[in-house]
Every structure is written in C-alpha cells, then in structure tokens.
Amino acid sequence: MLFRSTAGALERWAAEWARRRQGEDSHTVALGRQRIYILPTRFGTVFGLMTFAMLLGSINYGASLGFALTFLLTGVGLVFMHHCHNNLLGMRVTFLGATPVFAGERAEFRLGLGNTGTEPRYEIELLHRGHRGGPVDVAPAATEVLRLGLDAERRGWVRLDRFGVETRHPGRLLRAWTWIHMDARCLVYPRPAAPGRPLPEGAGYGSKGRRTASDDDFAGLRKAAPGDPPQRIAWKAYARSAELLTKQFSAGDGAPCVLDWNLLPELDVETRLSQFARWCLDADAQGRALGLSLPGVRVPLGTGPEHLAGCLAALALFDADMDARGGPGQQATAGPSP
Image 1: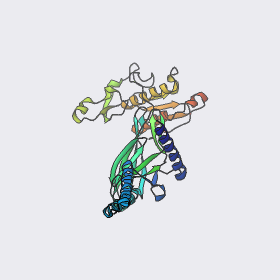
Image 2: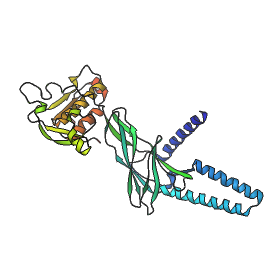
Image 3: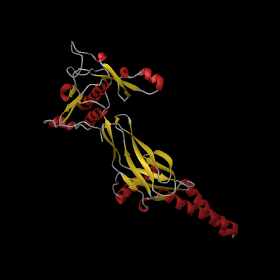
C-alpha cells in the first residue's frame, strides 16, 4: 500500500512537472527530442541487472568469453535505446475531433498519428488513465487513427486534457513516451428521458380535427440514434441488414414543435433538460419543425440532423444559473455542434 501511494504521488509530480516544462499544446503536435522521455521497462531492468552480474563474474574469473558476451549484450541494449527513442521522434499527433454523445455513454476522441519520416514506425500506442489505444504501425508519409474513450457522466464538455504516446519497440527493453496536453473536447448531450411523455399541447399534432402522427407520410429511413423511440425502429430493415434504422415521416401541415422552458415548471433543471432532449428526438423522428426557447437562448424553427444537433447542443451547454438570473433570451442560430 505504501509503495502504491508513493508511486502514485511520484507519477502526479512527474505529470505536473512535464506540463510546466512543455506548456499547453495545440491540436497538432510534432514530437521533438526535448519532449521524449525514455526509461527501461521491468524486462529491461532485469536485462540490465543480468548484464551487470555477467560483468562482475567476468572480472572475478577473468573470463574472456564472458567479457565478449557482456559487451555484446550492452551494445544490443544501446542500439535498442537509440531505435526506441527514434521510433517516436518526428511523429505528428493531431486531434481529429469527437462525435457528440449523450450523458451515460462513452466519448471517443479520434487522434491521428502521422509519420513524417522516411522509415516506418512500429508499435505506437496511446495511453490515458490505464486505457490504451493501439498499438499500430505507421508507414512513411502515412497517418493512422486511434481512439481514446472517456466515460461521459454529465452534460456539457468532457475534456481529454492529457494523454501519453508511447512505444516499446524494439525488444520491449525500454519505454519511450511523451505527454500531450491539448484542449481536446467532446460535447455531451443531456441524457434523454424515458419515452412515453407526449409532445406538449400546442407544440405538435393531436388536437381535434388535425392529422395525427400515425397519418404522416413515410419519408424514408435514417440511422438510429440513442434515445430514438422503439416504435420508430424499422425492424424489417434490421432483419435484412442487421443495421438499426429509424423511420422518418413528413409532417404535412402539422404545427411546429416549439419547446418553451416554462412548459415543465415542476421539474428541476436537469430533469427538464432530459425531457427536452427526449422531445427533440421525438420531433425529429416525426420530421416536425423544431425550436427551443430557453432563458438566454432561442433556437429558431428548423429541421434536419444539423438542426437537431444544434438544439441538443443548446441543451447540453445550458447554464442553470441563467434561469435564476432571468432576463430576455438572445437569438441563437442552430447548427452542428463544435
């Protein structure tokens, strides 16, 4: 227990020292000599101790063959050290983005490993809090994409602010690595509430004498998204292709869905946002025009995947304190989340 706590404290100190030494990184980082660290692995430590023991034995007994083997193994270790360090030198690490997810899902950060040299790079890995991505081999002038995942428990931004790039090639005697400190972010939408609560009165169909959702014209299929109502899943298409698709319907002359913040005064902020996320998904599945009216934010009516992403982004980034401050809402334009 004492050893683990000491090792943990030492690792945290080393991480903070590396951040102060290197500073913050941009979304594209070229690995230079000054930021690549190298140490022996456990296997490499045993190899070094064995070689040192062979040297002592050779000195004690004056064994010429022992000296020859000791110097040969020492030379192999030095060559491996050179190649291990150069396996990372000149690599280019680029943040390629992260697809927004719902709270409770796993955010995946896409990171590109580019080889700008003329020699292939072997067994390159990404490391973050015990999770690894890779290893991959990167050919000259090529780029390989790896993913690192983080659990997204709350709405808003989840950040991958520090991760490692490492290699143990060749021989796994040594470990060369570097730390990357970049502002890599993934947007997390509110967790959708359970299906069942209908769209609010006046924000959709259902009034007397109007068309109902079941009367809408079928408009096609799209890929299913987390939170889509089960009754909208195209099960026959799933049986044919094993791909989850959601039915889309044209809304015809139905009323648009404008979700106002004051519709659910009995719910707390997070529960209200979850229900709004559910209604956004339901309205999009039915092909209806959708708009939001939140304290400080207004999203005009619109349709389509980009508009849905803009509405969910507004819910994800909603500041709960704004409800207490009040004040007039500001006009916001829906669009794809960053």
